[in-house]
Amino acid sequence: MSATQTTISPVDGSIYVERPYAAPAEIDAALNKAVSAQRNWARLSIAERAAFCSRFCDSLLSHTAEIALEIAWQMGRPVSQTPGEVRGCVERARFMIEHAAEGLADLDPGPKAGFKRYVKRVPLGVVFVIAPWNYPLLTAINTVIPAIMAGNAVVLKHAPQTPLAAERFAEAFAQAGLPEGVFQYLHLTPATAEALVHEPRIAHVAFTGSVAVGHKVSRAAADRFISVGLELGGKDPAYVRADADVAFAVENLVDGAFFNSGQSCCGIERIYVHEAVYEDFLARAVALTNQYRLGNPTDPATNLGPVVSVKAAGAIRAQIAEAIAEGAVPLIDTGKFPADEPGSPYIAPQILVNVTHQMRLMTEETFGPVVGIMKVGSDEAAVQLMNDSSYGLTAALFTRDLAAAEAIGAQIETGTVFLNRCDALDPALPWVGVKDSGRGHTLSIWGYEHLTRPQVFHLRLPSET
Image 1 (cartoon, rainbow, N blue to C red):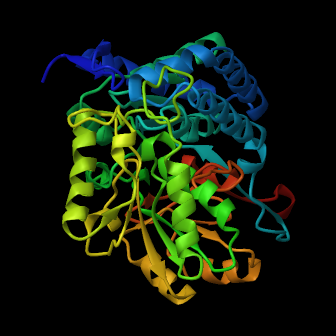
Image 2 (cartoon, rainbow, N blue to C red):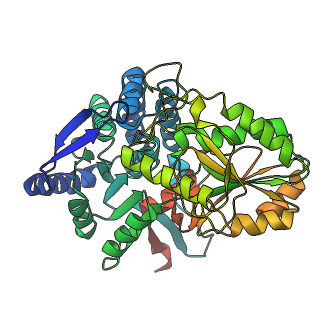
Image 3 (tube, helix red, strand yellow):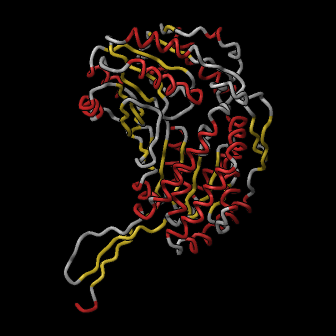
């Protein structure tokens, strides 16, 4: 393997970033620095840590325009949308900072005569974060800030497609005056990253990415008694009931399917629509999809950019072609999107009907701007189809009946149930997946559980001895 990491921009196929991979001596020095820095960092109060992290947020936000353009060039999301990731990243960070005292508070098991008893949440040590390219700031911040607020040190390995995200974090922490070694990043080969999971100086691994690599991370950590957080793939469903506001459902679900060119673990990839509103839903969805503007993501008029690479585009096109060969019917004329050309990372949005669960398009993660839509005759049929998946990250319901939504949601095998919205994340709620969508959870006050360990104090009072 080359000693250099190269980022090919999907915008025009040019080399956008080149970085040398970290050498063994550099990795060893970074880990030693992290271990040493973490001991001192853990001694600071939560309020002291919060001051550094708040300044980090201020610094990151002050560079919104530059970071937004970098994201567009690195992974292809339009500049009309990328500033929202910077703001969302800061929003999540600030929530975790502001609620750290609550998430890290001592636990009181209740009174016991003659004793003082409590449980402290203490940091794990050095947290190794492996972040993906599709939301390079948002996915990384889910662990980086709470890990640091909990008293850990962090070593970040970002995806080779978005290395500048890690460097932007480092710059913002440096401007915040964070003690050296508390946050570091390393550009690593896949083999070197896997080796770090075995490293005794690493106390926790947080990985966001594919199921296949998630299994590798899990296996690599299996011979060590460390915790692993896995946020993996999704094939997230939506169900539109007969009583839904169809126009509202279409507006949200089309956006949920095609935002970020469909490259979201919690994006909508399959939709089940009650037969009573099926035709109306399809007509509205096609009309709205045809309004997308596919093109260069650095153009402010563009609202649908390329997918991340030519290779990814080829896999998406192959899945669509396979489904059509098996009987699926495309509803979008891709000829209306001139940028969509064979061999290009620019892919027109597509809606497929006459789809079945015998097609990969409805069972395997596509990670592209395509959605399959099926007609159903009942809530029971919709639940059965939504659960017919190896994934379970989110599920979206569209109905005017809150009680029905709660009853249906209780039957769905998923981490999050949405009502009348989709493809969203609230930092006050834990982000969690079931089945092949992952293990553990991030964000909210409960997110601190996975970045600390309990230390029990069971103290007999001196007067009782």
